[in-house]
Length: 81
Image (tube, rainbow, N blue to C red; front, side, top):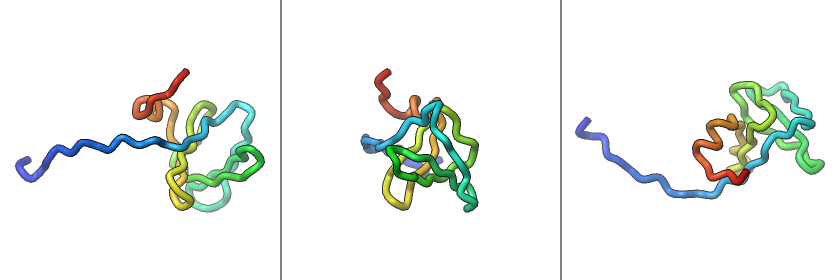
């Protein structure tokens, strides 16, 4: 694969919310869009599989908020337990 090159990723800090057991999650009716109430504010996010307790809602910007499974999030980020 001569045309492929290796690139180092930039380290970034992610803003994320861990889904709690008592959170109520619901689908919004829009394709693959879910919502959860966080500190009294409804947060809509994309999820292509059902979110579960312990998974994360990751906020990049107002147009990019998405679900990330717990195992994937922990694999890719430093999470203090």
